[in-house]
Image 1 (tube, one colour):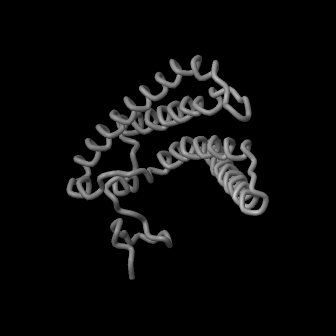
Image 2: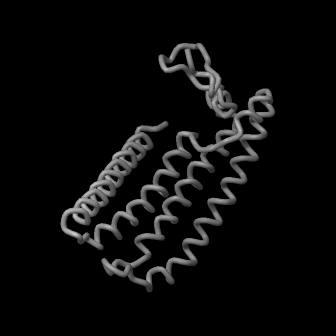
Length: 184
């Protein structure tokens, strides 16, 4: 992973923490106000919902980058290296197709969302739903890079094992631990 990539994903990690903190704070303040003053802040309710949408979509890119999304490791683990490479390629091609559909659909929907305003804040709804462009483009970029490395034979043994659910142990030694078999 390049330094630029590490910096970018570190920024996304910080952004996710800020969004989660802001969302929790807004909801907490609203709950306290409803119980103590019988009123709340409608703006904080709406902004917390928007933060949740952004948190989910940005988080999808980060999770995909780290290959921590849902998979079928039990099935993949039954294959050898060559079978895992084929399954990895098929998986990435399907993910690429879905990401292209997401990006294209978000782009087509953007003018409609831009013409609508949020009921309380008055923000353009393009700010809420436009995050699909970031998610789709991010997943496309990651997938194209992975497919390039797969086709050119630059996928590491560690990635192939990880695709099958085998994880490096926490201390970085050569002992391998099967996913789901991490107990002492």
